[in-house]
Image (tube, rainbow, N blue to C red):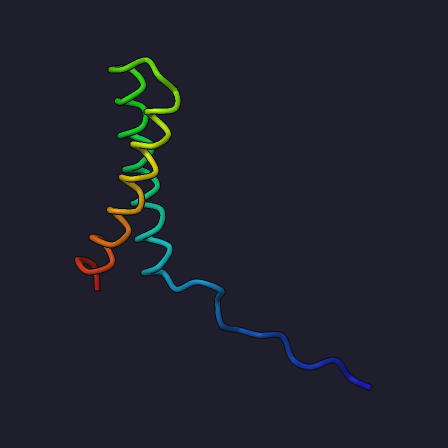
Amino acid sequence: MTAPPPRTEPLLTQRAVLVLLTAAFFGLVVGGLTYFSAGDVASAVLAGLACTGASTLGLHQLIG
């Protein structure tokens, strides 16, 4: 028995990687700025996650 040929298609498209990495970068920046401003880790994490989610939706519509 021979093994099936390997898949040649990528797991994520270049556009998806660009959108997700840019949104993650925005979330890290907003989370860091929130931490430096408020000094509270929980607030910074919530702000970063909210920004990441909103950025993902916005970038999905903007890019492409």
